[in-house]
Image (cartoon, rainbow, N blue to C red; front, top):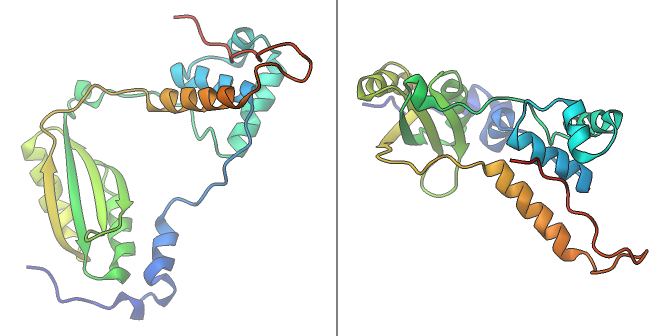
Length: 213
């Protein structure tokens, strides 16, 4: 049984409504201006984040300082956030993906719910959505017993949650390299907008280099 509805605006007037959501949501990022060399660097890194700047320079046929300057600029622009490994969680025993649909007590409580959900290690991401729901949450657990423990001991202990609906994943498609697909699409769009012959009459501009398989 849920607690009586509370008006959190009286407790946190500066975080009520959309102000509270902005306080915990990821900040907006302006699209960065990128060229072929930038896209080539990004494509190589999403295929293998372990590539060194020297290896990237050899692959792209540019100097290592050029690669270093480009990567630093992409980091400052928020394009490259971090260099990390892609983990197969099932291989580590976390093979069950669970989706939660959550409604908060009221619009002022969304801040509290998001803040508390973010502290739970098993929760992978939290999104505010439109429609009849307030939040969509994805978490990874070992099995049904682990899922029940997370729900009962962590999620359902958050007072500002009004209702939850739990959906367990029965089957998933194999993981795809989403960043690589988006970058390829960006490269294709740029190529389609180019004239057949450039201003110097040299023909099509070169395609950004691809790392050999």
